[in-house]
Amino acid sequence: MGKSKSSVEPLLFNGIEAFRLQAASGATALVSRFGGQVLSWRTADGCEQLFLSERARYDGSASIRGGIPVCFPQFSGLGDLPKHGLVRNRVWTPSGENCRDGYALLSLAVADDAQSRTLWPHPFRAEITVAIQDNRLDVELEVENTGADTFSFTAALHTYLRVKEVEQIAVQGLRGLEYRDAGDGDRIKRETSVELAVDGEVDRVYHEASAALLLSDGGRHLGIHSDGFPDAVVWNPWVNKCAALDDMAPLDFRRMICIEAAVAQRPFLLRAGESWAGRQSLVAI
View 1 (cartoon, rainbow, N blue to C red):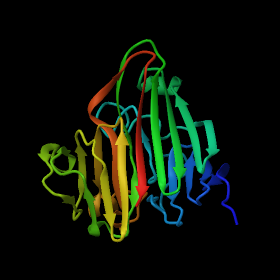
View 2 (view 1 turned 60 degrees about the horizontal axis):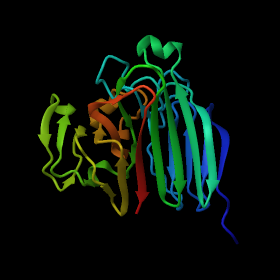
View 3 (view 1 turned 135 degrees about the vertical axis):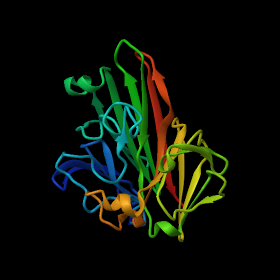
């Protein structure tokens, strides 16, 4: 019996337009037009790798809690725009797909409009490309300055990873890096641990984090690599902040860790007519 073919198919997910990607290996991904957001990624063994809150809202009133939200042109509250920018609550348009050699690929795009320019006066085009193959997920964000003036931005792929128990995970690859600790008054610190463990709130931006990271979760391991994104964010809201979020259950913090590819420490300057791209790759080992 031969392998099934790779495919990209439209569907409705909780009432919103989405696409289901399937690789020939059996790996799948679900990508929402709302936010241009990956909502699910299952490896070829059927194991879900991303966290998606059961209380996530799909009515367009807020971004969808979980998966891989796209933050642009502002990461978090680092500026005067709404938190995490302008595109995670917009409907993106399909801009391309490809299914061959065992992988499935989908691109979605969004551009400035009259509403976005009332908050941020710069013409732009952003495109997200999602590709799956075997036990690998690649997500690339490309930004083009379609205006006549230079603009600066921060950005992130706000990746929510599903874990069995957050207090039993370990993240390797951060030792020696400087980081801004948002959970401790934005103090600048240096990571001294060979393995980062989580036993309380974690909200850190690691600077110049170019090395690959490894998430260990019991017998499961996930390699995490970014290209073009200079920083890495590690976030878990822990007990009190999780309880304050109405789109997360009180114990959801135990089942997730965000490890994000980001442009956060220094805004990126993009000249008129130029483009920038950054990618995060996740590989189940």
